[in-house]
Image (cartoon, rainbow, N blue to C red; front, top):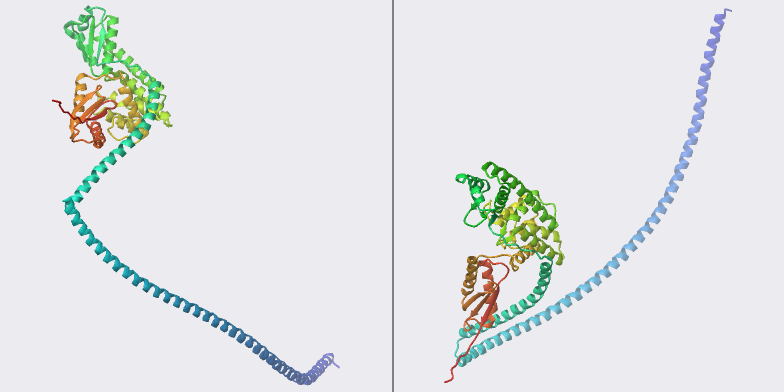
Amino acid sequence: MDPILAIFLIIVISVIVGVCAFFAGVQYRKKVGESKIGSAEDEAKRLVEEAQREAEAAKKEALVEGKDEAHKLITTAEREIADRRKEMQRQERRIQQKEESVERKLDSLDKKEEAVVQKNKAAENRLAEAETIKRSQLEVLEKISGLTSDQAKAYIINSLDNELVHEKAVKIMDFEQKTREESEKKAREIISLAIQRVAADHVSESTVSVVPLPNDEMKGRIIGREGRNIRAIETLTGVDLIIDDTPEAITLSCFEPVKRETARLTLEKLIADGRIHPARIEEMYEKAKREIDQMIKSEGERAIIEAGINNIHPELVRLLGRLHFRTSYGQNVLDHSLEVAYLAGIMASELGLEPTMARRAGLLHDIGKALDHEIEGSHIEIGVDVARKYKESEIVVHAIHAHHGDVEAKTIIACLVQAADAISAARPGARRENLENYIKRLEKLEEVASSFEGVERSFAIQAGREVRIIVKPDVIKDDEMILLARDICKKIEEEVEYPGQIKVNIIRESRAIEYAK
């Protein structure tokens, strides 16, 4: 047999066998599946029945538990409702009790209101009765006294005014006495200590200088040919040379002290040199000017060292040095400024204050006098402007502004500088006053004192340190004397310029005179 045919037959037989096996397997699996499905359905039925039985049991158990839970909730709710009902009953009882209490109080208030109304009516009736009695009594009093009610009121008011004047005067007198005793004691201690520690010398100076000459021939040489030398000196220095019959002396006159001192030094150098002509005069004037400038600087530095202060502008130092050549009523202004600085510093120390600022303000308080020959205005205004220009503190500026009372002193330093300035100017021998101004001041004192009603005569005594006033006893009463003295003091302070203080002494004298015949 052909091998290919044999292989083909084998393959066909294999296919046929495979197909038969496949169908046989399918039938077998079908039978097995049907048997399994039948058993599964039986198992499912069994499971369903068991599930139904369990569900019924769970349902019954849930119903029982639900009934128990519902019973518990109902019981709890009923208990809470009962509690709330009891609480509401208690609240209702409380409200009822409060309403009853309020009603009782309202009843009580109504009764009290009725009582008050009755009392008001009774009080009004009594007031009406009192007013009637008052009118009747006033009529009786008017008949007895012979005065109407208005006249009686005026009389009472006048009596009260008199009593008040008396009481006011007594209180003022007591207060002034106590204050005076305490303040004067302390002030005397401070001022006496300050004056004791500052015993400054005083040298009287004036606005003229006298240059001694070796002989009278020197006058002619100073005048020069046709007066050329004296004209050159006066033109350069700005000083008037007075050459008169005074033997061996020439007088220099100028209100500017630095120019006068420069001219004096120039003349002394010319006289010592002996060569006097315009060129030599100019040369000696320049030397004298340099010496004066150096002297001004030295005096300014000496002043700040002696006063114990520092950090002062160099220009202020130079202005302080210029005060060495300036006098006020014969008192050297630089020495006066140093004295004021010492006094203010000592008093500040006694009061427990910092003395450095007080000394600084005292030293600079008259700084304006170094320029008042060159700039218009009072030395106070000039001093304030200069101090502000060179960055001095407002405390120092205010002390300069207030040291003559141009403005009210608002700091203790300003008050101390005022007091120190008055002490330095008013101490015996410190200053001199020309006769005309002295007489005018005394006349002004008497005029101010006599301008008040009730003053009979007034006398300025003790070189103007006291004004004695005699009043009319029928016009001024004892109680009114204190008030009159205060008014006179106030007017003197406003209208009169004076150093130190002035005592106002009022005298009231009543006399009874009869003649035996």
